Length: 166
Image (tube, rainbow, N blue to C red):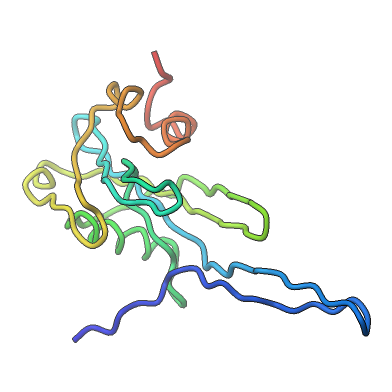
């Protein structure tokens, strides 16, 4: 039996004392970072998966991604998440860079990777792990894709994966 991974962000409640009579409580999110992988098929389509996102309260179309496990590299995370969520194996990855998402009490670092997949990927594709669905999507259909995670199209344009929107 495989031991379950504990890669979810952890919430810590920290007490902070400013003097002998004052006390403030802060919520601090500890997160090892995340890796996103953009699988591109030989005809230019990209792999999208649909997952339920609690913060949005609905299923959204997004790229395979996940949290970096303790002791794991972002590179290894990207490969692992692609395999777990879609059944595909990435042979080569290109590092595109990283983005930061910062909010009140949290700061996430997300490493972005690109991989090209061959014709065999069409038959090997399956939704797995926490992905409800997985499909190859033409890039010219992304602008009208219902339920696309906010900011994803801009992200793909900025990284040169998709041409600017019509």
